Length: 91
Image (tube, rainbow, N blue to C red; front, side, top):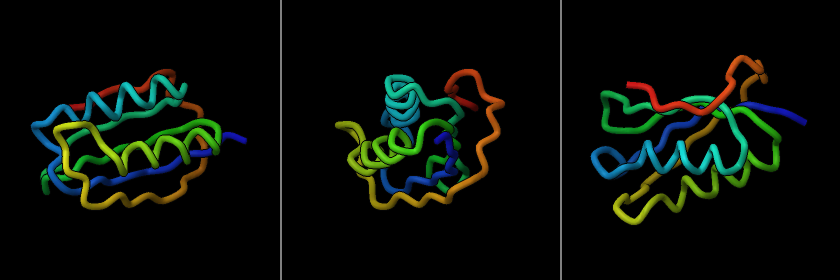
């Protein structure tokens, strides 16, 4: 079943290639949506896809990439829209 989630990752996640990591991870899992830096220093986004793949995606975000230090991952389920055709980095 397809689902969606909005997410916010806090910690040392800006200036360390974290958006690229999120985008690459989502694409490898076949998810669609977007990711961007937030003015408060966190990274936020939306991901859509199969529920089990969303769960795997969120687990990867908690680990982060080698340069990041993830302190928290918040997410909230959303209604699947199907409007996204790929996963993009927004600025």
